[in-house]
Length: 349
Image: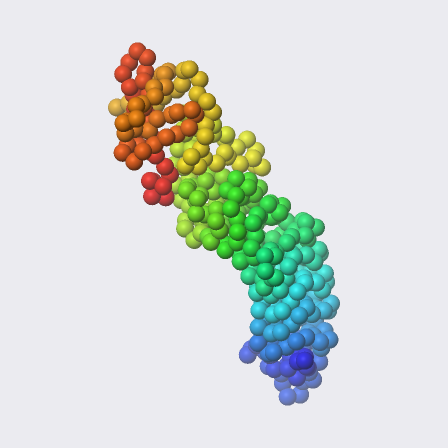
């Protein structure tokens, strides 16, 4: 068992703040604002930490702590670094009313809890917990609710998560890292992201959901604030193109649902999306010399087996590789060609 002694505390201050020869340890520690106790093989902190009444930043990462130390007197603390320990629960934080950053990466924590009272918490890193096989990180609703207005950055990557649904309450988030989990449902993910109205940066690389066709495009049109997705900028031009393309596609087939509220995401369109059965008269699009889209009533024509074009059949898109055109027959005029890309991926976005 290795405990932090008064002598060790006095040694582990910044280079700027050094103890004078005529200064008592107690008086010196009372003025200390930064303590560097990282990688000291500590198994516990001990009550001596109470001498540091003006402590604002505490580095305790890379030790062997099994619990978060009691720090009732450290009510000035704003930054606490506890990553790479053996901590199993989030506890003993209720008096840290000014805490802004809490780093708990690579511990043994199975649930996000114990955050009640941390009204100033802005950043929480709890990625890559060492959990039993097949267990995932869980979320306590009360804890999430208590930091929902203050928390701006959250890292829950590498925790075998299958959903982010519980995080929808964190309405102030601007950064969310959920990479290398097991998220697979694009509709559920899009619905959650729609609630995070201030989210500017998202990392979901390494999840099954991102292997789906047009996954990136679907996530972009499901949010209004996202600026960076998996390290790549989401430009205004990109967003505008995707939103218009999805709207035109939905108008053509009658299946695109434009969001009507902040909590309602857009309908996600996949490569094999099934659309509503078209009526006898449908709207087709043709390109005019000015580049505008005109509509005309037309009747769907089923192509023969040797056709090289994309057609509608039974309310579903069918396409072969020879052409990206869509066939309609205007009555009584000849076939017109609809305008639109065969997939978002072709845009190079």
